Image (cartoon, rainbow, N blue to C red):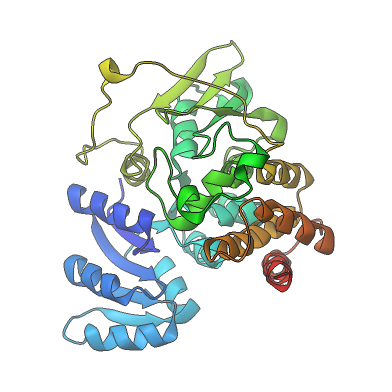
Length: 382
C-alpha cells in the first residue's frame, strides 16, 4: 500500500477522486500538481498540507504563491514544477492523471525516480508506450492501471500464476456511449450536450466525447497492448451497456475471469493505491438482486469511425498513436467549441493521418512532435 502519494492532475476528475480515496484511507499526500484551477488547488493544499504544490500555468503559479503565503507549502511553476512533483522525494507512488500529452514527461520523471506509477493518463502509453514501458522495465518500476477496464484486466490476470503463457485473449468492455445503436445519419447533427450525456460514468468533457465517438475504447485498446504486452489480435472489444463487468480475460482452458462492480472510479483508484491489498474506502456494494440482465454486443466501427482509426493505429505502431491522439485532441476541442460537427471528428483525424504519415522506432522527441504536428494540422483545417 502507498505510504506517501504525489498527484499529477489533482484538480481533474481522477485527481479529485484520488483525494477522496486518500482522505478515506488516511493516505499522506506529499505533492500535488494541476494546470490553472487555482481556487481548487488552494483548497486542496490547505486540506492535505502537501510539501510541494505546482501549477503548470506560470501566471496561475504566481497567484497561488500569494494565496498560500501563510502556509508551509512550496509553490512551483511550469513544466519543471510538474516534474518536481512527479519525482518528489517523500512520495513512493505517483498518480499520473494529467490530461493529454502533458502527462508523458512527468510520468517518465516518476519512473526515473523509482516511484510506483498509478497510471490514469492514456496518452502516456497511446503515444509513447514503447519508451515508457521499456524504461519502467529497466528501472524495475511497477505501473498499475487506473482506468476501470485496465484495472479489471490487471485484477483478472491475477487468477493465473503464468498469465503471459496461459492468456488466450483480453475482453475489453465498452459501454457504447450515449449513441450506441445510432446510424451515421442520426449522428449528423448531434449536439455537444447530447454527446456529454454519458449513460453510466461521470467523467471530464474530453473523455466523455471520446466515449461517445468510441475513440476512448480505441485508445484503451492501444493502452492495453502496452500494459499487458499483447498484440492487437489478443484483444477483443465487447459492448456491455450496463458497465458492471469492467473487463474480462479468457485463459487457454476456456475459463473467463471478470471483474465486476458499480461504475465508480474510486474503486480502481483505491486498488491502485493499496495493491496488493484491498481496503474499504466507503464504496457502494453491487446489488445483484437489482441487476435484470447483462447484454453484450459488437462495436460498430463503420458508424463510429474513430474506433476504426484507433485500431488501425494500434496495428501500425511507430508514431501512429501520437498522430491519432494529437489529431483527436484538437478535433474534440473544436467539437466542444461548436466549430465542427460530431462526425467530422473522425474526418479531421483521418486527414491528419494522411498529411503526416508514420515514423517507425521514434524517439520521445519525435513522438511529442508528431502529436503536436497533428494538432496543428487539424486546427489549420478550420
